Image 1 (cartoon, rainbow, N blue to C red):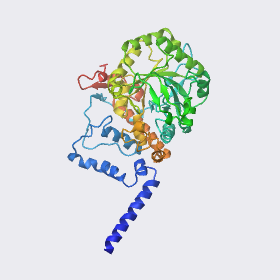
Image 2: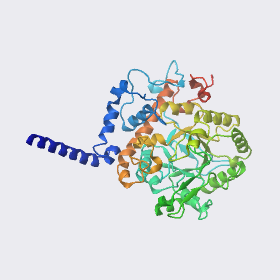
Image 3: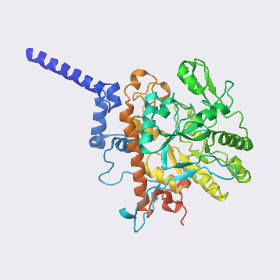
Image 4: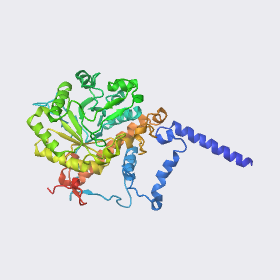
Length: 476
């Protein structure tokens, strides 16, 4: 009897010790938020490899990102080996054409960076931006992400030398804290750059542009997960802090229209772009989802005829893009996927002779090196990712983004859950993920006989599955 009491006491003391350890450590958000019981997740994750022959579900069936994709990001962010054993598990729809004589270590070159914006002539801006990285952080708003997550992204982006977009929620102190280069996104509600009536404010544009970290502005027409739909920010989430950042009334519902009320055609879009660029002196891009092909042809014609209307870059978001919450009908069935949209936009840009005038940024589930390298081959100058960096922060794809109950604190609104995400630790993981991505994309480039990733072309990738037009490459 006495022995049983002693054993029970030791077990209780052990669990208390584990609880205290889990609560105070900063490396594992799940353990910090869910002490003791969180170990079951890590046990299952660690031993899952050995138990896979008994599993009924393969590593490829999870959606929207399968286990192998997420594992690559997790390992990269943690700085552990990404090598695989026993051969490939992939069933690819495309492959890269390796060169007979790949680039030697001593012949490799650093990515040279690319200039966004022009300094002279119609449509010029005072401060063109030289982007040093081909892989960057896509738009995620403060409010959609927790303050801890935004802070970690900002610090990590600075460490990796990449830019981060604010998302349509406006520029917060958490975006600025880490010192990273910032892209200020202008959504349909014009949060952060609006007057009291919701119209674009020249004064607010100048105020935002005065921050040296803000390098570019982005006019958001649509995003992949919900093209053609705005949103509602419930009044109970419009705290005085959020209201001040967005320029809205505290504790009242804020409605984002499904498009900019002052942009109803291509001419008005060009005038809007030129206005923002003239006021801020910085490059201006447009984020959109490809749907109507006639629109894009007309738009590029207008760019050629009216250079002052021309955006400095386009962010092409695939219909598979993500968001905190969207109608399933829009998320799944509206907008071309990036595999079709990107090659189309790149080909049309070349047809109109705008390759050096308009840069292309690709986004939409491009979170691993193969997808990023493919996008560069298809004509993208840059790739940006949101969900890849969420995984780097510790997201476990719990699918609770819109509820505010994210267990890892990434999209949480509950202070108890946010507390588990340590910005200092996660900033390092963000940086590791970005650097590992660049390193492995460059490895693919070297295998193809290229000195750096800026030289990728369609001829370097080939489709191997019928019916995937987006992956079909030119033969020369």
